[in-house]
Image (cartoon, rainbow, N blue to C red):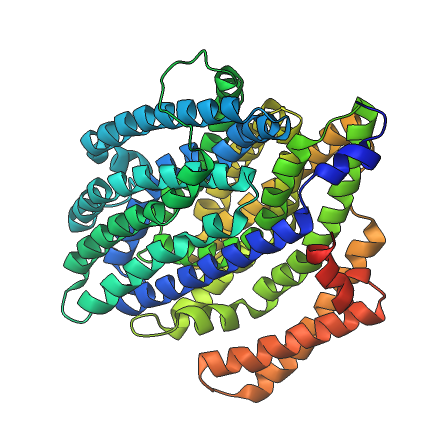
Length: 533
């Protein structure tokens, strides 16, 4: 059974590079749809009070989705469910799926009801700086959005089933439907409604989109679990294992969400537009994290969880996967971080500058985005390390380090957003950039702790300094070329300017990585990262 992991069991593992490609493709489509949604939203709302209220309101029920959703189920449910499938225990896997579905239905129903009833208190906790009509609108929006968030939890359950059966594309493209319905809602009513009524209508569009996101996945999911039946019997095979893994990840995910809400709380005390601008910047920030971090991590988790063999063989296998995945992620994340810092105004203007979203708003989002870029590489690489821990059925170690990061980020975020602008003699609104920079700095601390702890278990892993240095050098050369193009592009349309500036940046970056002999830069090698069997 354990004679050779690489000669026997690895051959049975999914082709994770192809799966990573499918995940990345699905995420790319859904994120593009999200960017279009945000552009349309910015056109009608800009950085107004209504925009602040909507963005803050959406965070509150989204807390429910993120707690019970993709991240938690991926870490606790997929390893157990995928392992049962790998051992040919399909009936047990179907019973497990039904048991988790029933528990999820009960828990989310109770939390949605409680959330609607306690909304005014939640607003006081999440956005204490809101007052008057702005606060009342936020309360109304939360009550509308909560049921939609409950529905999106079910979409995450569908994702867990589909990913375990190596059906990656559908689960990650399903959010396109949700985004599309919100876009259509804004297009239909945006020209004929004031901002406050339009915000309420958009919230109802979000709920309708949540329902459609589940509906398009259910037919395939139900075919995969034909023998599934809902049951609240916690003694079912694997249920206790899932629950034991769920609790630490639930808390860990909650800690991460609390960190995001701390950012929102701090921003709510800043002048009008800070909460909305923070949300716009986060949409841009999460794009490379999703494309190049989540895609690899999501594809690797089921494969890591199915690996069997001796401890030494599994450790060697995990270490090899980690090192390959880390290089693959860094090749794309380093230039993304440099682009956010050097060219964030070009990016934000191209995406958002329309209607009520002005050039000064684009510069404001740029500052916040540049702060986020501080920890972009650390947070993305950290996802892959967390997946390695989850594949080893260890959900507590990432929790401990997340707690440390959040505690530090809260304190530093307060100083950077509330105190630093005063000391520097700059307008208070720029404190929003301090919030994201503080969070990024703490992300590096969390990443260092994750790497150190995992290396003690499986041996040395990580990126070589020379490799990362060459990536930063190539990105710096690309940024210099892009700035030259920017200076000569004049006052052209933001989208046209972005095509030339970012195009030059990308061309020089890839050319420089080829000259610096970085293997991932070679086009055939880049393709085989996804297609190699």
